[in-house]
Image 1: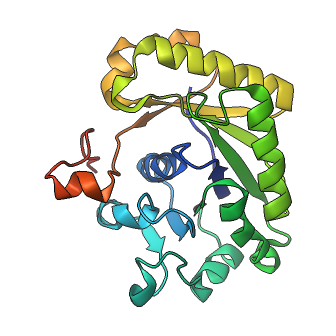
Image 2: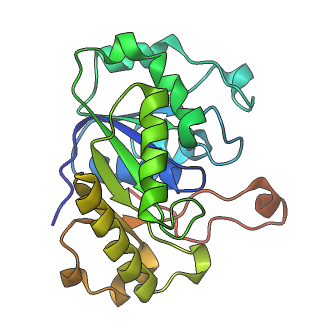
Image 3: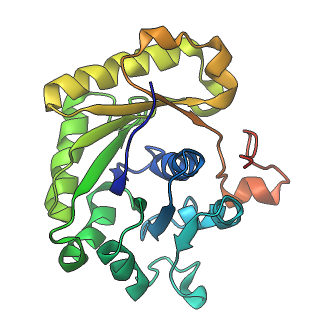
Length: 239
């Protein structure tokens, strides 16, 4: 099964759900599918794991990344660029918005209400069932309600991102899939795709899933690991 997402895609989720890694890898996958892709970094919350940290990777793939002005690039509260409103009024085949975590991060979307008006959008909640606050269905639904209230938009799809970082094994992927499939049924939302780290794919039985799989190469590491000479544990995506 293939991913068929197009149009304006807003990626939301709780803090630590992995939505920025998902956004980067989804942007590259859509570009490889032959679509014109633009990405906006709207994460005003996390100073470490932001789409802008992968700007060279995205540029190498021909993906435009809309960022705050350079002087605000590493600020805790970066300034929204007017270019973001412009890209929403004239969207590419895939226009992807990576939004900050939890309801606090989603408040930025309310400020874009005019630009989003009359546009068809998909707001997708990334769920990692192995993270705090999303290890239960009730927790996931609570976060959904909080994000929707802050964004003044409705979530209309789910992305499963089950992982334990370096400790992830095939059984974790299967357990995570069962969880997000049950969440999909309870919430009445489609499960758009499930992520699997590229190195695990040969060990995974794809026939067990009723949704597409997105191969993920991890691109983001915290600065304290970079300082120690470590880099992304996964391979770098290549064109």
